Length: 247
Image: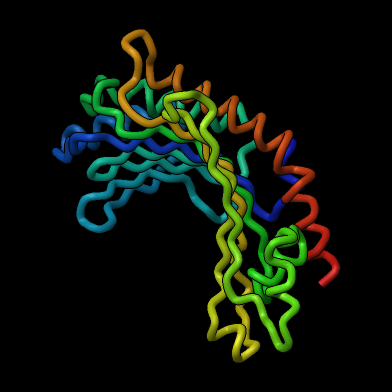
């Protein structure tokens, strides 16, 4: 198991490559590409098309742990939910990126953005926004707003993006996503839904001539892991898990 498996109900590592030019959509091209992916991961047997242009190959989801890969109009995606190890998930992403130039004619020149996302989902029945405010705090500048008579938090999704180089092409974003709306807060009727924490390391623009997509992805993955370990585990994930456990 990954070192992050016990920190949330679900953990996943996704890779997304957005391209400036549309990816091929011919039947033969798409099938040959996914056949090569399946050759490496034979348990990926479910293939389907969604929204007429997005093609997906994935494993059975029944066990709660599965791989998936997709080719969209201008985006190449790969993900693994509850991977056995970080390296196992990254191996899948490397394969997808390694196959892309030959099978989908993807050039390092046409990269719009490449990112690696570490996602953590918490199942919670209640006001996600109020939970985040309680677990993480809202900062001194906004504390008094929450103390107003009768106040109930209906929108709180803290997020911060930083650039790590002067040209701002490589960025890291730590963000949250709640799935509670004002109607649920007003009625007090909540479904058990996923509250998400994301760490996204992203590079914008064409790759350098001597850099491959795999090289760039590995650098982003390392950067994302460093941020998770140093800035997210103790500061966000554990406080959130503790607060949920007390509810």
